[in-house]
Each structure stands twice: as C-alpha cells, then as structure tokens.
Image 1 (cartoon, rainbow, N blue to C red):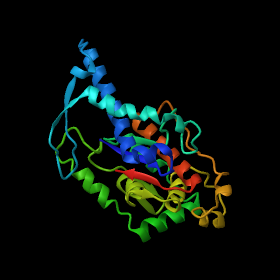
Image 2 (image 1 turned 120 degrees about the horizontal axis):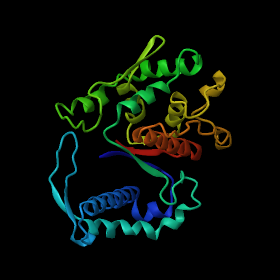
Image 3 (image 1 turned 60 degrees about the vertical axis):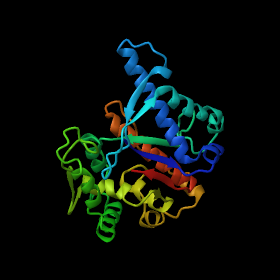
Length: 271
C-alpha cells in the first residue's frame, strides 16, 4: 500500500494507457520483481509463469478478497510501459527517472522519522511572514489533523501499523503555534485528489521546498506567479544518505510537486 502521485501533464503515454494504468503497471512490475527475488533467494528456479502469490487490495473500510496472482501475468501487463517509454526522455515533467519520472509512491507505513522531518521543515517565528501565513492557514482552513488521525486510529491494535509507524502523532511547537504530524499531513493530502498550482506554491513555501526569504508581496503572489518567474525558484530540499527510505520518498514527492507548480499543472494524489 502506498500514496501514489503523478504530475498532470498531458503526454502520449497518459493518453494511451491513462495515468491510473501507468501507475498500476509500475506497481505490478515492482511487485513482480520483489516476488521473483523472494523465490530466487529461497532457491526456487521456476520461471515466472509458474510463480504465484496471494494478494488483496485493502482499505480502512474494506479488507478485500484475496486473489491468486501469477507473476508472469504482471510482467506481461507491465511490458506495455516499454512501448511508450521513449516519450519520457525529453518530457519536462520527468523528474529524473529514465521513464515515467512524473510519478512516484510514498510507501506505507509512514515512519516516525519522516513525520518529524516534515515538522522540522515548517517555518518558525524567526521567519515571520511565512510563519504568519502558516498560522493563518491552520486557523482559517481548519487544519486540525482529524482526517489523518482517523486513519492512524484505524490501525487499532495492529502491531504491524498499516499506515503509520507511530501510534501517536509527533508534535512541534512553532512559537504560539503547535503543529502535529496529523496536521502537517492533512495540509498536504487533505485537499482532495488534485493539488492545484495555487495550493502547491503555498505548500512548497511551508515545507521549505523553495526559498522563503521573500518580501511580503512576493509571498502573497507566490500562488499566482507566471511561468517565467516560477522558473527562478529552484528546488531547495537536498537529499541525504542519512535519510530513511520514507523521507527520501517525501523528497521525491516534493520534487514532483515543485515540477508541477513550475509547469502550472496539478499534482494528482491518491492517498
């Protein structure tokens, strides 16, 4: 299970396979590779056509029915990605991968380190303009974290922690503002399936993905800047070998959000 995202940039692969179809095939290819590796590590040399595993699609409301999946079927379906991969080479929405770099995943469970990392990126009172904007956004838009807390609580007594590694959200005090991990995640993922450029610009500011040393007028206009001005805003989050996998996935997510914002298109998210 994972949070899926894709830059809503029109291209031949999306027109032919659909955004959902591409994401599905990428997941199938990765799942097939993991299963083959598991079989091989156990000394099983059978071809993928003779490998199978049980799989169920689960949500908080529906645990799903188990299905027997043949690995070769996944590989055959995912092979259609190769037919359109050349379109990705010069695509402005490609964030770095050889193909289909406009999309990615944040795997569940979200780690406690990743939640703390998100909170640490929020502005403090020493950055008064962006901090005031954050405080205003939390108060006016009602980001209380309830929707994410419900998902966290849905884990119940599940020792595996399906969605969150930590049963309780971390907290950080930003002057007179107290923010929890639930609130931070709600700001990002609680706005629906499309993070439109206007909202993306604000999130990039809040989480330090673009420079925050701006004048009041520049901050006020951050959501409506034209493309030429947006090009001046570099992506500010540096990756680190010290990050856990979940943090690196969030870095990639913000990179995709930044690219979508510069292209003035939405970032589609399925959380």
